[in-house]
Amino acid sequence: MRDFSSFLSPLMREYVTFQKASGRWNESTYAVSLARFDKYCTKQYPDACELTQEMVDSWCRQRKTEINNSCVTRIYAVVGFIRYLRKRGKATIKEPLIPRKERSVYIPHAFTESDLKKFFAACDAIPGSYAGGQLSRRITVPVFFRLLYSSGIRTNEARLLRREDVDLVHGVLNIRCSKGYDQHYVALHDSMTSLLRQYDDAISKQYPDRNYFFPARNDSFHLNKWVQDNFRQMWSQCSENRATAYELRHNYAIENINDWTDEGFGFYKKLLYLSRSMGHSVLESTKYYYSLVPVLADILEAQTDSDMIPEVVDDESL
Image (cartoon, rainbow, N blue to C red; front, side, top):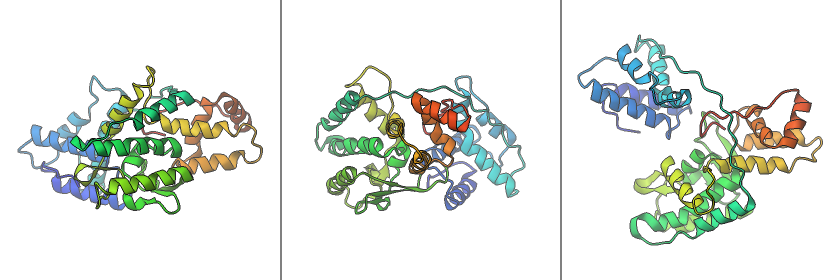
């Protein structure tokens, strides 16, 4: 748990403990947002001993440089914290308003077979040395991105995988840290399971007692910046088009859907399997991908009498 420093520290620790026990805590996003609010209170209100409306409103107020969705991401954990305090009679301040999420039409990059071959070749070509953790990066990067590509899991889910959550015997991932409380299991292809076994043997020589499957220094997990920086560096060697690591998840969904064009009664069964594997709580989230496959978009509209409009509000929304 993070070490908070403001006068709110005891309440924040209590809130985090409660959220974790409820299975509704996302360490990679909520913890960062709450820690930033804690530092803000420490700096701006060093002598305060009680939470006031001014403190909350000044932090949660949308900034000129923010779009609605960015503001929501920044303040959501703080809003949850205020709700927690109000329900228990530990604060009487009003709950801050959350900006309405903006709809955005977003088309992920369509990876070609050539794109992917060049990308993974770049990952495999990372030089290995013991300086500055370069050997660990050389071992980890090719496996990490191949896992995203072959399983469709979210980047956060991969980063936060613990060692005990990876069944190297049966080839199954236990996804605990997902979007909200949505623990689920993902079955891996045999080739990916074999690669993970090789990776586990290699990385264990550097981190014999690690807790995270993809370890960073100080027995921690890699930050999202690590994913972004490494993907950007590898991708820049392959293409001038914009793409992100998260789009490997989109590619996984679309590649699966492309195999269904001749399906009959197995159509909905496969849709359900894909939805559960990707950790979607509702089928509507999975149906988003049909809008990216024109033939199936027409089929879905005909069978459900509904339009599918691409809508993604943030990097981890689907």
